[in-house]
Length: 460
Image 1: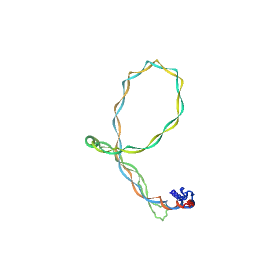
Image 2: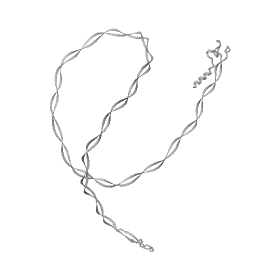
Image 3: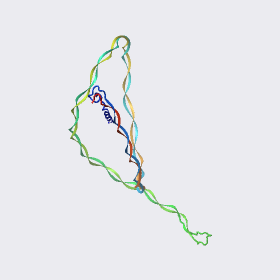
Image 4: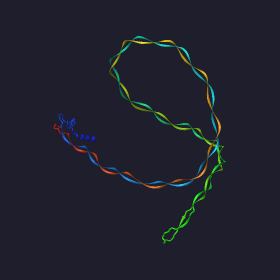
């Protein structure tokens, strides 16, 4: 825009200058002998000038400010409580019994097996063969060779230069489109069929049996022990001694006089004694029972179902394309080339000729033959021999015992606690600042230019 404005101002300033056809007077009918008639004049024109001035702008700035927030946190504080409980435990009691078992001993026996093998052996055979030996003989031969020599010649050749020509061609393309078709397919659907079968299960039943077990019983037993017993008595004793003030009243006090005597005292102790007692227990046994159950079998039925599918087909569509073809234009060009001419030259060479001479030569070779030989293979056979042995086996029975233990129960109490934290936020505020701004201002400027003037040679 600035360049357009300057061009317009220059055009206004030079609009008064005479053209070449009117001899400088600005009149087309001026005489031919009329010379240039113009004068220099000062004019004031407005010229654009960029001026920098300061403008006030309002901007937003941020300052950091610390704030405090408070919130309540609920915590779970554990509180433990001790409790006592009574429980029953099974105490193991170890017993022994005699058990018979079978042991298998390993016994090795010798056995023999006869087999045949083919044993190879080598046999020498004599024969005669024909051998060819080489014999070299020197010969001399004369031959002629062609020796090349080059000659420069001038000729004319036709050169083709490429010229690109635009051509238009119509062509047919296959445009795909989808067509919905209907077909039939075989689908297998599941059909559930109920079937019945018989099966055998083992039904448990309990049988009561009688046995003997050892029971630990607490029996009270009275025993004697020696105890130290104080069989003393109270006696009166005067606190004042001889030489006491005669004016004080006589007084007495009671004093315990000890008499420690060893006495036999009975006490009762509970001792644990093992007692054999009969008891009944139940044994779980099984008996086979035939039952009948019904189950479902999934069978597949074939069914013809219609379905729709899309087929991609193509239709012909005519299109036009423009392409460039490179055509070659012929042009005659002179060039120099070299011609190779050949001349005959006689030479002599010596060469060797190999002749093969046949010769009969005897030789010996080995032939591998086989003969049958019987051999015996000895091996051992392992057998297991059973025998019965007796051993003592320990087994464990369980007796119930009452015990007491302490355990802790955890209760969770909710306690409220206040917490506070300090955080920083950015607070916006406005501020006026001075910003330099460039501005285009039209300023007057005095220039000197040529303008047409009145000519005394007759121009009106």
